[in-house]
Image (cartoon, rainbow, N blue to C red; front, side, top):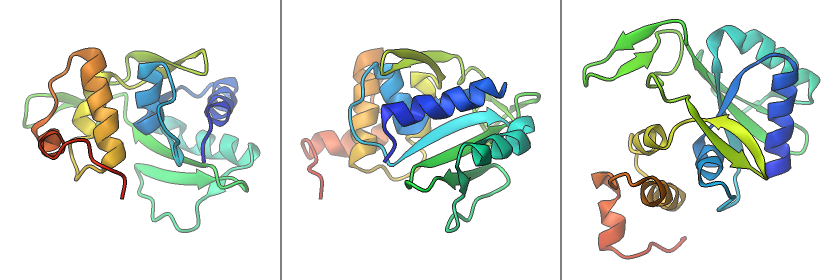
Amino acid sequence: MMRAADVLGVLRLLSDAGIAAWVDGGWGVDALLGEQTREHNDLDLAINHFDAARYTEVMRAGGYRPKPTDAGTPRNFVMVDDAGREVDVHLVDLGVVVAVADGIDVYGPNGLAYEVGALEAWGTIDGQRVPCCTAQFQVRSHSTYEPDFDDYRDVRALCERFEIALPALYERFTREGEPRRP
């Protein structure tokens, strides 16, 4: 379980080492909302792909190691500490912009395809201001796979707070009423 203090500790560790990191995923949603809305199993971070080796070194020094069961890719991997706290890092190639078929420019090709501008938001975790992904990017990125209960709640909260249309993928939840956790 990643608590707010754990998130801030990882961000401080990286900042002290000169590594820029943006909060993504569930903690990124909560940062944008300015409050923790649910428990989080992990912390998702985006970093510049040039910082990957240094990131791994700094995280190892901070007590994290590659997660043994993580298949990982050259663009993202998970590190875990002895308490089971997981950090899923997403590498972004901030040095190159690529136009994709739908007309949106993304960073690439040596990282995950984050939209240009996606890393320009600020949120709050436990009263501390943190860099994070934008609400619009969070909503779009949470709409590229089959959503679960947490995804629905996260996306709905972002859409309500930032006046974003709820993606069609989530309409089934509104037709079925508020879903219940299985």
